[in-house]
Image 1 (cartoon, one colour):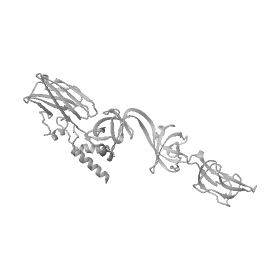
Image 2: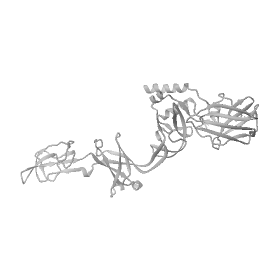
Image 3: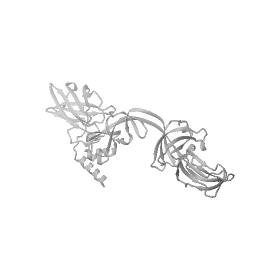
Image 4: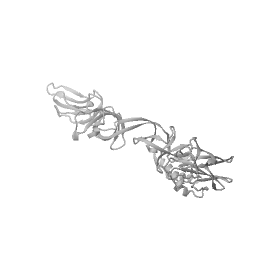
Length: 411
């Protein structure tokens, strides 16, 4: 119930926030939707007026990187582009200021640089014509929303800083938890005789040197103890008072604080595993995870031509049990990258792969070019600055709120 209340509050807050329409891209759907929000020129751009002089501002990106194109008018009639000089400054959410200068090209003034995504900024336009200076400022936001910190916290929105990470290439394998044969013993009588006492039960924890049973030797008729060679757990008790003690196992004991995991690799996978590789384990039943490394590759292939990789599994609290099936991710390669984001924060927005940057109470889309991904982190090749705070949990809420509010912009 609380979750629903929080989400409703979030939606109402966003609907109450005023938003500015972005600069129009010629022919875009957003240009049609935005009709009436501000005056448009002949090229579907924002028309800025100052007396008889007017300047139409567009972002052009048909088969070319996005860049500004300006069209100048006097009394609504086109002016030669070489009669006008202009500068546009874009102030972005994170404090970055981009300056764009212009040169005459055909019937318009062409911007000098690419208008980087997102096209969300406070705009300052300065133009000069016939010795007169004209200045306009206006907001042009897209992919942006404002959420007070308290509401964001209640909605479960979590942020983190983008920075260096290790991208890992892993190989999925399956296996089973097994007893460590060096800490497993099947105890029998040293001398044939009669079992006079058994002092332990199955599942009982015993200490090294503790007496497990008393046996009376047939020849000596003297009693001697059967003792635990190490600390461990009684796996089975196969003797009762009065039983004959010979070569058969009387008590089976194992130290379960250290186990083996035997992972099965078949075919080409067997050629990719090696001693020393890091392994992340998860119980097939869920709940338990652990980190270890491959200690050995058994030299004999098993059923189905599989190779067994053996790794030691520390089990001090006894949560792992022999016989439990496990899934494993074997790290076969690792690469340090300068900048990465968590996969949990990555979303699709328009035709882009994005995360949502946070500055104070404001969240804004960042369009990313990604490199290698490993399911946990994704390498960032472009689109995000190191150290940027971005949403890592509940990022879909940010996307949904932006889309509902109409703060997205079709290109």
